[in-house]
Figure: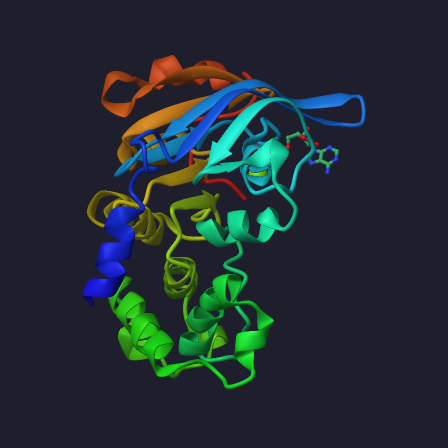
Length: 271
Ligand SMILES: Nc1ncnc2c1ncn2[C@@H]1O[C@H](COP(=O)(O)OP(=O)(O)O)[C@@H](O)[C@H]1O
Ligand SMILES: [Mg+2]
């Protein structure tokens, strides 16, 4: 489907060629408690960046800040052309339409079909008024295109709740693509999946970044997954970036500073 490809290719960078996400010295605080303390982050066309850090290091808060869900107290954050701390009236909806999100728990509507779940991704941009006549056939074609992209077009008419965890996360990724996002934020997308499925889903996300040009920020708390499935790593500890670099240039030892001694950073047998 050429229209979708064109839209994706166009979304690779902002009009002036700068990164899709550009964050400098970002600070977030809840009341008097600082949670992010001077974070820098770039996300450019084609990249998959792993956001690594122990539980409580601020990964989810950073993703929330990028979509206007966390109280920014300092610094700058430009996301898909939106100046997040200084959004114009009514711009928040456009920011969120430009950011595809994927979550640990998939967040599908269990009794709706896979296809309908994907179609809800189009609502972000369309707004509720377009629901009146149901989804247009062009939306259905696009939804099937994205289901094919994530490898589960054959499940389109099944209820979402009947799918395995790995399949449900694929549906959630197709739903995010349905927004025709300019960036994808995936917050611990494989924390509920067994290791083989985790590898598959992370490779799918990386392929979307590489082939469709939509940069992906994926938070992971497990070190080996970040080393295997990212182009760059940004490592948070206590709300600060402690380690960052190209993944191929980082070794496990470089990243162990992200974790308390008590935590086994290299073990993915969490939960
Ligand atoms: N709404 C909130 N109010 C107060 N503190 C919060 C809130 N959300 C997160 N925090 C705190 O911010 C820190 C980072 O949390 P979070 O971003 O969820 O970390 P991670 O995703 O890396 O596990 C934690 O200490 C957490 O308790
Ligand atoms: Mg989190």
